[in-house]
Amino acid sequence: MNELEITTKEVLMHHLNAFGSNNLDEIMLDYTENSTLLTENGPLKGLGKIRGFFEEIFKLIPTGAEFQMKQLTVTENVAHIIWASKSDLAEIPMGSDSFFFENDKIKFHTVATFISNK
Image 1: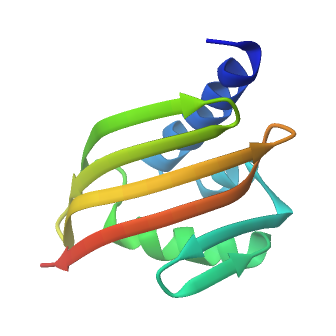
Image 2: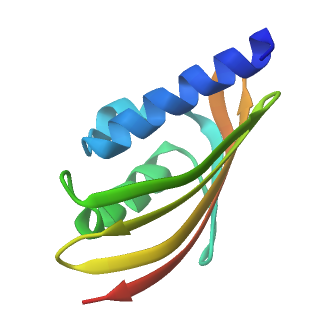
C-alpha cells in the first residue's frame, strides 16, 4: 500500500467510525463546502445538504444497528465499500459507496442503496 492509499484509508476509517457512532460533527470533518454527495435523488453539494442527508440516514441506521462490511477496497485516492445493515426501521441488504479524496477530504461520494422499510 502506497502513502496515498494509506492516507485514503485513514480518512475513510475516520468516516466509517464516525458513521458507526452516528457522530454527525465528526463525519462533517471529512467534507468541505466543495464536496458533493451523489445520491439517487441527485447531487447534494456543500456541508448543509450533506449534513441533512446524514441526519436522515441516521434515522434508518442508528447507533447499534446491525452493520456488515462486505467489501472495502482502496486504490490511490479512491475507496469503495459494499455493505448491508438492519435496524428496527429498515433493512438494507445492499449498499455501495464510492469515495474520491482530495487533500485528505472527501471531494465526491456516491451512495447507492436498496432500502426496505419495516
